[in-house]
Image (cartoon, rainbow, N blue to C red; front, side, top):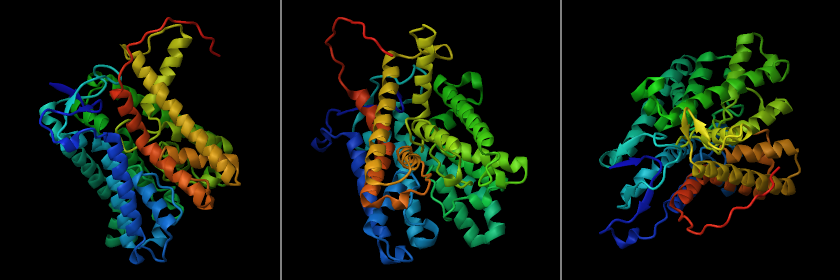
Length: 455
């Protein structure tokens, strides 16, 4: 029997315990995240977790940001939290990042559920298929994938941090930034993130490699490792890789053009190659990584608007990234192109998508826009700030990016609670929506068709 790794439907098997009856996996994940946030807040509130005592609100906001791998902060991580506090944040990031990737399989197995294929997401070959007998090892494989990627990251960053900071501090910084980057968390030990290394190709390229790998996810990286040939890759992986490359190149080129003469950003760098490196870093990080080597508040309005789009799109499904996901974005573009060409079939690489898949993408994008709109509306009422700054904060929270134009600490309690809720929705929403769309019952009622004007 074959199952699709991500398109799983849970149903009770004969002989399972009554306790497993009626359990909703997304709700269980939400409850687990809330417990993790609560535990993290309690640990960060301990006297020895911070240099100066933090409030419950500051501790809860930091814990939520870490568990949802966002990176928005109201308290500077490097100067305000002790080593213990920073290690708590790292643990929350790791648990939050890996937890979402492994949840679909581990929940089903732990609760004694069996798995059956109900629907397909993109096409027959959209995701790798694994046998039911090997599903039990999937969680371990994802953990091994993460540990391997992070070990490589620690070695790479250690080569640059150790000569500058010494063995102890250098390795610790390498560990911190590796875990934060791979999980697309964006937490940094400096208040200006990685701005001190804007001209350092080793650190900039190593960090971007880590968060791009995390943003591609287990499915894509493992298939690349196994197939090693473009023609043998599944349609899903081809689409994700191509879209990621094009988006990254487009973002880099546009930022280079818009910021080239800005004396507060790229204009302050001497060589063209330094400007290109900084534009690359700032172009790829909005897709939920959250680090910055340029002052976000000093970016031009055009660059900030571009980043709104990149943050909203996010990374690949089943990765450490969030947003509406790049697959949703590509499907919406493909559907629009097909309609404008008078073709009712939406296709990639000579493979057609089902109408159900297109509707799922539409639902995901619509719900994402609704969350962002309500967030911007709420903060506009509560906070007196520039509209662009408020919109930037909300989209950053929804995409669990962590970039900010300096608004986070000025939101007040009500505003921070809204941002916390948006971070949680942005992190858990796609999974919950996907589960709901997968397990819903199809209506057997059919009505006569009618024409309806659009546009």
